[in-house]
Image (spheres, rainbow, N blue to C red):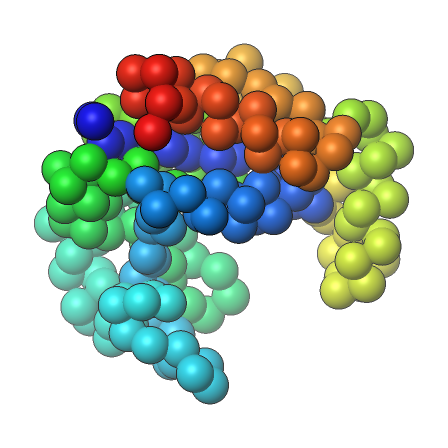
Length: 187
């Protein structure tokens, strides 16, 4: 069966990473491994968790067009290596890339064939509650994420499909059904 890149996007707190984790139970779906300039954290393995690059090497690869998308977060650079994704797709895998909307736009502009799914919350209130209940962000960070989410929600029409995450397992089943359809009826 043919492989392809699957871009899963949506605002922070919508559950896209959790949906992605459920999708990865299918052996035909593999996670995209990002490159970063940050040092490895305890237990992280190069080529498995991230491709760890020094800043000059990252810049060289970025200038050479070797990333489908790349961005700076804090003091570190992150990017999606084109050769890794293309290799996994050629092997017939569905390569899952869980990414924010700006990165999804860069991937689309990179010219690689992909399918894209936007994950929406069931309501604005549900998104606010999810962000607050995580307990990982300050009130200022939550306000910033919600401000960004307004713009991201307006971008849903840019994606091939939209799934509303009312229930995590049901949303994952809906995305999986889309993947199966794109693969030609099932994996």
